[in-house]
Image 1 (cartoon, rainbow, N blue to C red):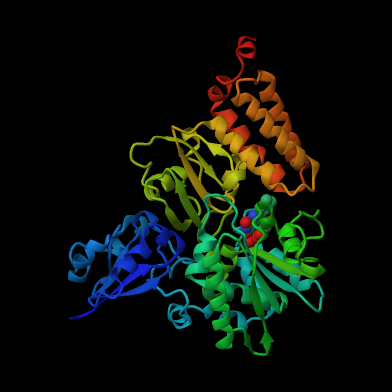
Image 2: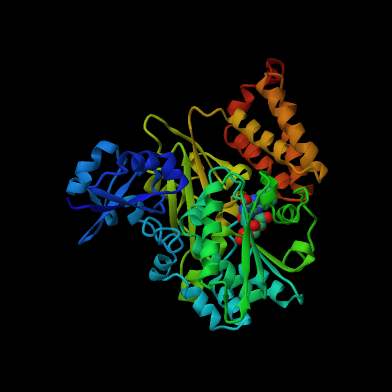
Amino acid sequence: MTTTRCYLANDTSSRAAGAERLAEAWSGRPEIQLIRTSSRGAFFLEPMVERDTPKGREAWFNVAPDDLPLIVGGVGGTPVAEIPFLQQQTRFTFANFGMTEPLALDEYQSRGGLKGLAAARSLSPEAIVEELRISRLRGRGGAAFPVWKKWQVAQQTKSEQKYVVANADEGDAGTYCDRMIMEGDPFRLIEGMFICARAIGATRGYIYCRYEYPAAARAMRFAIQKAREEDLLDCDDYPFDLEVVIGAGSYVCGEETALLESLEGRRGVVLAKPPYPAESGLYGKPTIVSNVLTFATIPSILARGGAWHASLGTEDSRGTMALQLGGRVKQPGLVEIPFGLTLRDVLDRFGGGMAPGSRFKAVQVGGPLGSLFPESKLDIPVCYDAFAKAGAILGHGGIVAYDDETNMVELARHFMAFTADESCGKCTPCRIGSVRGREILEHIQAGEGTAESLNLLRELGETMKATSLCALGGRASYPVLTAMEHFPNEFRSKLSAFSSQQ
Ligand SMILES: Cc1cc2nc3c(=O)[nH]c(=O)nc-3n(C[C@H](O)[C@H](O)[C@H](O)COP(=O)(O)O)c2cc1C
């Protein structure tokens, strides 16, 4: 009997969608050999099984154990290159996804891995930073700060010891691309961090990995060990080593100063800036804290040149963005495209519209601190300045769609309660303001609110925005105020009869 070599994703989302059950059902079947790869991120098609054909890979979607004869018989597959969700994407950072075994360094190299590091080795530290300046890459963790500026500060700050820290806390609800990178292409993160280390003169790195990502932490630890064994991390007399540290299970520990406090073993509490970590970070030493996706973008930039990266996207937002679709869309999954497509296009072309039986009501971009947009705002281009002009944030690229069954007052309360739970407590506006905000919304929900409650929420929001120490308090009111602005009747209808007559 001939054995057919097939590919099945092994990441957390694919396993949750049934990949593991499938692998177990087929284990020991002589007609099939399963290679466990990273996921393409088309989660609505998982479990997806692929096999090689002379014309490239073919795929079977939402596979059940009984589909085995079809797959080994080559019946009814779809060429992967013709899957619209994937075909319309421009994948650079996620080019390996679905193709490689995540922990096979040779496969990473055979698909261009380590070329960025090789290019960096041929450049001076200043020239690496210059390449990043040309690329116009902005940090993908949320603040969208130009990467080269941070690197230049760390490079020019004199110190015996410097650090590189990957922010893998990925706390925004509806985001998962950092997890995918760590589980699916861990050597890319290592390569990006090593390039940064060389540019700023750091010899030690940490990956601060969210507590809820055990598979990602396992994959990273394995890949780091492999990189050590292959002398990837200790070449040209440039020693660099890194380790995975598990986060404290707190949203605010994703904020860079709280993260560094936590990494040093203290409570994750936000510190006032300046000094910025690039000057004085971990143990008071110059430290680059960057998002996983930011680091993972860097190998391609060094390999292809900064000008290549700058040629993609819009004026202020260069390159591609990994958008993560979730909520009530028909096709949840990972979408890497150049900046600039409208939100409507993203939801329609990639999200496939709303899930069967549900109608669109609102979309939230940028996690729990992101604005809630109604249908009329969907023509906004997905890029940093268009979002800023609309009083919104792109954040880490999470896009969550809500359907018409969603109660917007409850949603607003939920996000304010989230900030109240997650506030580190360091500054009064966030610590107290979020609790008061939650209470006002609970009063409204209970039918005890008045028109004054809405004014109070607006005032509270403005105060928190102007005076909080970090974006947790500073942006906590955005989902609440945009829900009130775009869905006013839902709030008004909850006010007490007395006040609605006024
Ligand atoms: C409350 C809060 C939570 C944050 N969570 C994350 C996070 O989970 N991951 C992340 O990369 N950045 C997060 N940030 C942003 C970081 O403070 C920092 O700007 C980022 O790690 C810098 O990386 P970048 O330059 O690659 O964007 C958070 C910020 C705040 C205020």
